[in-house]
Amino acid sequence: MSSVNTVQGSVDADDLGLVLIHEHLRFRDEAVAEEWPDRYDAQAELDAALEAVDAAKSRGVQTIVDPTAMFGGRDVRFMARVAEQTGVRVLACTGIYSYDYLPHYFENRDVDAMAAHFVADLQGGVQGTDIKAALLKCAADAPGVTENVEKIHRAVARASVQTGAPIMAHSMPAAGTGPRQVQIFEQEGVDLARVQIAHCGDTDDVSYIEGLIEKGVYVGLDRYGLEMFLPIDKRNATAAELLRRGHAERLMISQDYCATIDWFPPEAAQVFESRGAIRNWSMTLVFDEVIPALRKDGVLDDDAFHTIFVENPKRWLTA
Ligand SMILES: [Zn+2]
Image (tube, rainbow, N blue to C red; front, side, top):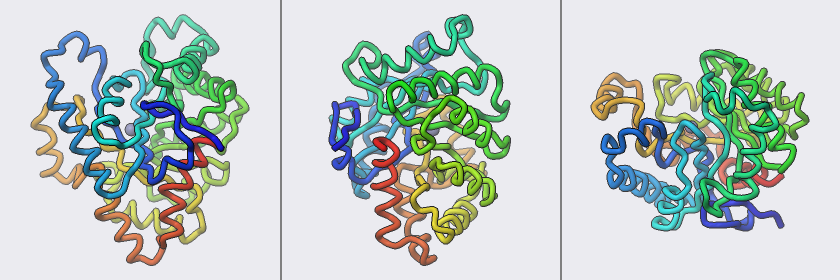
């Protein structure tokens, strides 16, 4: 029996149940939030997180993986509060979410020193608590795998090799980052069965996604509702084709929903909705629209559903 770290302590992997693999209880810049706290409404943020998680729970979700890392305002006390009040398990990560920028602190320390920070979060506890991270996080986006991004990937990889923790890597299919990210993990000796390349569902290039699956990694079809990257019909068609080709055991389906996010002024959400850049983005969209569509298409039966939402998360987190 293997166990998994949650913000409420270690649980048996068999008890994770139905998992949403990629959702954010809150996403904000920790530096801005620290410097101008009065620009943030703490109660409204908490209420939004509780509402989103309760809605997911009403669809049967028992566990949420929240891969909010450094620069996303990771706050395990906030996560623990939400987990406590909703009864939904939450898994926290360690790592750095940057498309290139690194603080001088990490610029002037080497890969192994960076990795040691991640290992401490996985084995000791995060932010002065005894809450241990369950997974590692890194990112590559439009700038590609820059020198700094590569450094973070190698540090994450080394922390994974040392601890056995799984890795989630934000990727950008439009910039073709996935193969290079996988290559770095491979060079560092990571077990690729512990790697998840997030946001693969932002492309409908099935052969690109299949190329990653063939390396043995999981792929995230995890941004349902973010129409600006790819509309839901194309996301579903891609998922259906991958299922038809027998890849259920490598797929992760989620929404990358942020209960609150400070990237834009509050009024922007309505503008995005009205322009169709986001549509019904929530922690329940996959249950309300995606699964019914895939079932109707005949590509998702009960077994495949169980594989994607129960078995895959468990296998990735514990293999
Ligand atoms: Zn995310």
